[in-house]
Amino acid sequence: MIEHEVLLERYDWLSAQILTKWRNSGAIRYFRGRGGKLVYPLIDIRWAITVELNNSIEGE
Image 1 (cartoon, one colour):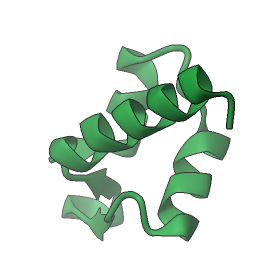
Image 2: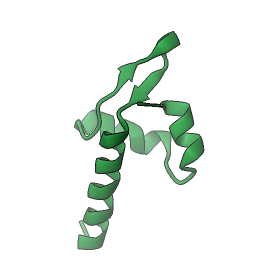
Image 3: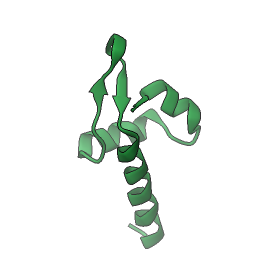
Image 4: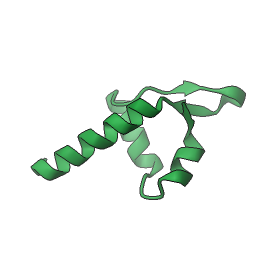
């Protein structure tokens, strides 16, 4: 699991808007961690990035 803020710091090209798009589409799951902070399963993030890159290569 990775916190929302840590994820955005680690990957400076990733934005809150992209994460929101992925959450709303069901591409990634999210949970409330300690202190009510948003956390994501890292495997979901990796999968969403892979799908996004594949779509951009295919021109979608």
